[in-house]
Image (tube, rainbow, N blue to C red):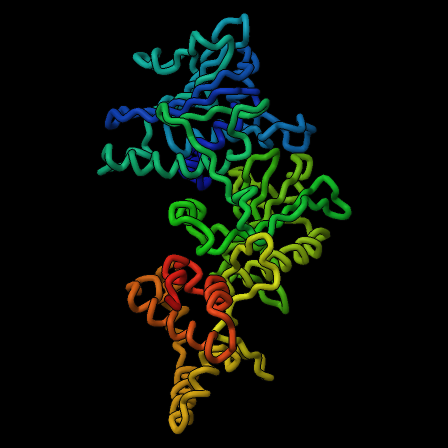
Length: 486
């Protein structure tokens, strides 16, 4: 009954596999291979590594529930805590758990838990079985190419291969597992010392870096901060580039497994292993907790904690949630506010790269202005300082009043609520109408702006072209700008 209850802790297939790989990392493995084999109701999953392996006595202890005391000191690079992960993760997906292991120079040892066998036992015994199930010997065979290592085998996949499950569904599972492993172990994958080569059904898993580290278009990639009173806790602020600054494929990849809005906030790591994407850690201002929203979706904060603080950070058995100590929350709030403010500015105003030597050369002012009212609400109006506006009004004559009335009508009827609703439903901000505008229509608008700059502002044609090349949305079409005035 206890084991059946532990099966409902809340693992997904992806988080369960990640828990098994934690043991491989702690064992010093350089190569980890995850394999899903489809065979209908006899399908199986295997995780094998070339870590240090275990002796018979060590394996027997590892197979026990609560194999270690979470209060005891551990190696600084140990990814475990409760001594439960191997069993709880495995039983959450399968009824049969077999582990085969070998120390360098030693003999292979193999033990098995079988929930169906346990159900038939009368009394209080919990028999572990030596060796794999008959017919499964090849599935747990250790690689001859490794001097040591461990194989974890799941059979009886009643939580994966459910009624109606097909081989096509297995591909969906593999995709979710790959995405999760790429995110959770991205700082541990590679060829450097202490890193692992992780493969899923023979395919190397490519790490997914949520922070686009080193990307020159990022508005913010801070130094690593150490918290006062907890110098072992490190924090780095990151604000990713606006969509306009990335290629479409790069932007889609940066969204992450759960999409842009869900991937914002704090990323909590222990020994470089991602524990949780925890949003804003229930931080907030004026009595309200921050939620995941569109305006701050570009903010991602890396937070590293040592395994000596597991208890203080309330790390759960699934390694999926963490909660900061009360004493550190004011510092985290201050850092989060900084990242959120930068992220909001990038999201709202579309940052752009300025080439070297271009300081002092500005584009036209934004056509829209945000005006804060005394009530605290924000209103939006067209800029009366925009060159095109001033050029038109200077030449409007008796139509000036009608044009101004039309502009005020547009300003007063901006469908703000509709825009936010569409954004929430589509999980993407509405696109600009200029994105699909044909070239002749763009040229017509550019020519109007060009004439306003030359004849209304007194700029030379070269200066007008230079200014338009730094003005949205024309800055993406230097080919059209080059022909203006000819």
